[in-house]
Length: 182
Image (tube, rainbow, N blue to C red):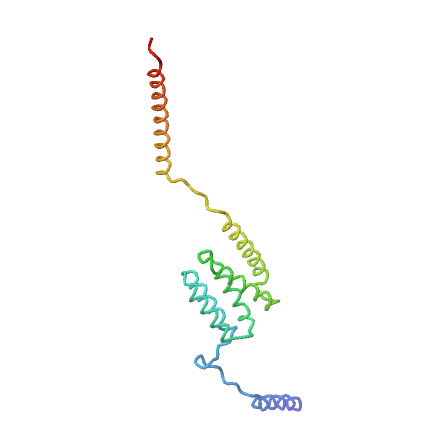
């Protein structure tokens, strides 16, 4: 029985001591405050769904609202990257300049961003695209003959040839008439 006393004492101490631990209520689903980490996946999925459905404005708004709700979070630091990706859509060539500015801001403000390598590549591609567009804009438009223009040109050439033949015949007749008769 002597050996049982320390074990009983330790067990009593453990049971009594556990009552001194602070008790945290379990968070209920209704009052849990969403954090950037818990909310990011659903916001990102929603934005990409909107973008695939050609609703870029709604996708951008979802991302911008998220960044406004969670400023300074690592997830919010990724928002400029995703907004820039959406603006690089070739269906909206006017937004390329804005996308380039967003990529530059992302690269400047997120030195350890998750998508830094992709952002650098997209930035270089965007610059190349802008240079190509500028070069194409500098080339004067070529006049492409329409099919009816070609037919008209062929008809004009035929009429010129007939006129030249008629003039040649007229000159031959004039020379014949102008010769003195014997």
